[in-house]
Length: 88
Image 1: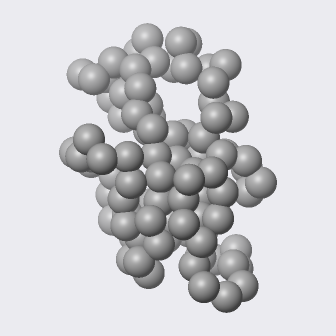
Image 2: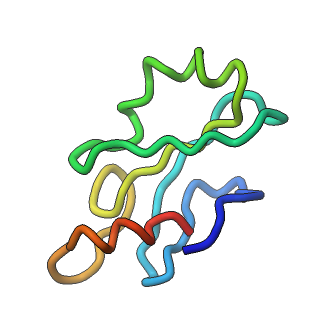
């Protein structure tokens, strides 16, 4: 898994196994990055109520885990360890 830094304007990143991971950025563009991860059955919209508070201080990056929201799903059965490398 790689570090999250200098994300492009395109709202997708590609994980090491080729799955496209959707993300949203919001908040202070000059703020320290804050990576927002949600529970397994949710997507990044679960952070809507925190956007104003977190965004006032941080550059927030909220992802959709693989198989949720707009992220892709790998072929076959999704297993828990595969989520660990969702963050390219």
